[in-house]
Amino acid sequence: MFKKLFDFNYSNIINFGFRMSLIAFVATTIPFLLLKLLSVGVRFDDIEFLVIIISITTSFYLYRYKSSIILTWVGYIKIGAIVSLFNLIFFLLLNFLFPSIGYKTEQLTLFILSMIYSVIVGIFFEKSPVKVKLKRILSIILIVWAIYNLIQSILNSDSKSSLDTNGDGIKDSFDTDGDGMVDTIFMDSDKDGINDMVAMDANHDGIIDTVVADTDRDGTLDTAFLDRNENGKIDKIIST
Image 1 (cartoon, rainbow, N blue to C red):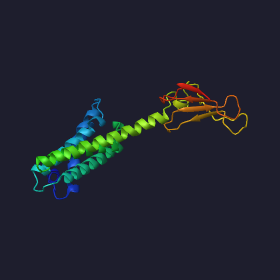
Image 2 (image 1 turned 90 degrees about the vertical axis):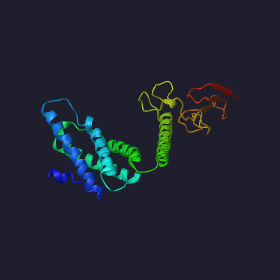
Image 3 (image 1 turned 60 degrees about the horizontal axis):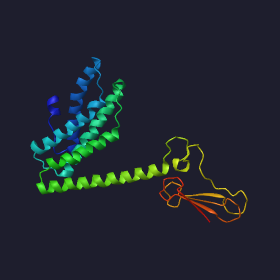
Image 4 (image 1 turned 135 degrees about the horizontal axis):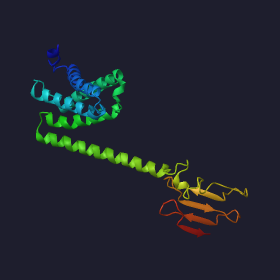
């Protein structure tokens, strides 16, 4: 039975991925459960990613040096995806059968990391000229750099517009003294149709940049408070 398990069908990558993942799962789970029975402080989360990496690397090696099938870079990525997926399914099954193992790993994150590993390592296992390998490595670097910059820009824009460090439910940029109340609100106490106090955010960055007022209530704007450095605090007062 075990001999048939190692009889890989390289022409069927799904069958191959299932067998490889099953072998890795059994080879890992049995020692792990024995350690748990001996009350050794080890978590399956700590070794799961390592098991997947070893499974993927072994699969790439077998296809590259032990089979007659020549895989392209995309082919290796597919193998890595299938092996990773079956491994995760087996790990979830283990957690279902033995909840006490404390399995808490985020499956999606683990799968993404496994795919990144497959994409990179697959370049070196593929039978291709060095020039092609270098081009693919450069492409990956550029893509990762672009994604990183996109994420950073999104995070920075969100932090500027929605920062609430004291947790009072009001953005810090509109509550500079931290009293839990918006610094400036729209008011028209004399009912003349002109707001006595107006908070403006002309560049839509979530920070008050101009405040105009009608303090003498004569129906005309008499003071403009400017925040030219956009730090959320008044830095210049202009009387009209």
